[in-house]
Length: 135
Image (tube, rainbow, N blue to C red; front, side):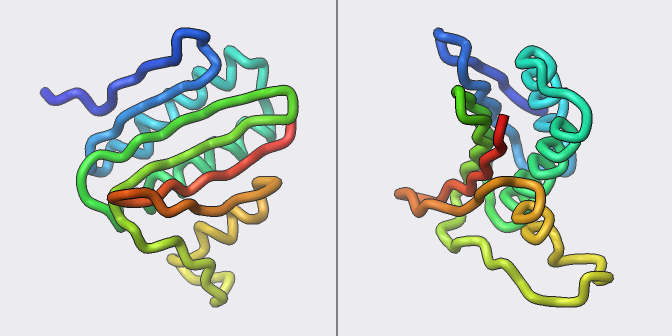
């Protein structure tokens, strides 16, 4: 059985980093890792739920629209937390205007609503989509 994710942390312990293989288990693996790290940081309740939902959305988008492994990072400082998802698709995410009852294309609206800020950065060979959350 293949491993679903490889989890590492920086030596100072501040940043969670998880490499996810493409496939349907990626979002669940990322949520488990982020849930554990949030608990270690004392983040619970509605805020933890919001961060986990954004985690699912960003990782699912990266897996769906990219190819190959996806990397997730969760860092924090005195101002808050930052979730970063890296993939190999260079196209930036597009916030679509559409039917709020539609089954698809609402994920980035959730990210926009639940985070204090979000965006993307082009990188050689892909991009990073990030979301910030106040502490």
